[in-house]
Image 1 (cartoon, rainbow, N blue to C red):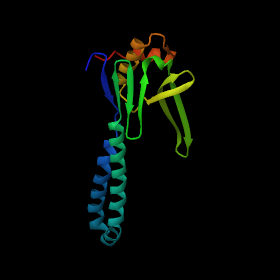
Image 2: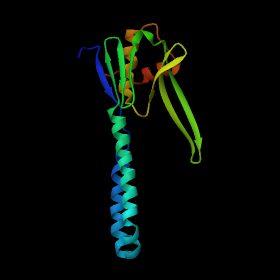
Image 3: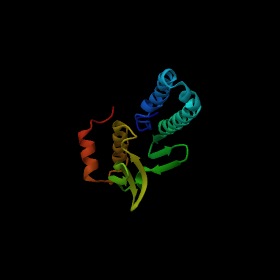
Image 4: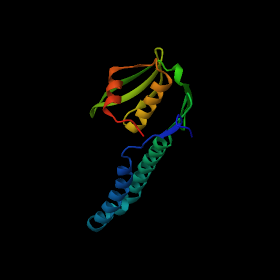
Length: 169
């Protein structure tokens, strides 16, 4: 690949913790309750292990999806690929980059997500959840955009993000 080409991959966050913790806790609980409540343990072990196994499998699939997403940059093209999407964007068509914050309210309180958004006029072309991509990778994409499209508008939050983070090698 040339110096103007690179590939970045998504990250799965800390999903490894519950992927390992859930089966471990189920096995430890089964061992503990087998000695203290043998009838209860035998009646419910299959259900508990089945639910824990299914939940762990769903977490593994989510982690695989997050890790398999990638952005390929070559020349003046950025290509985002995941299991469900395959998008190619020309650098000169991106007119602005901004940070957006979305807050959702639910029974557990509020949940805030931060996105780095690439815009074409007034339409978002691609959004990166900053929690699910490495900062150094997002910096690399931003620097590539600035290099290939000097007329691009970066909002103040994006400029600050670039200034506080050292450029990727």
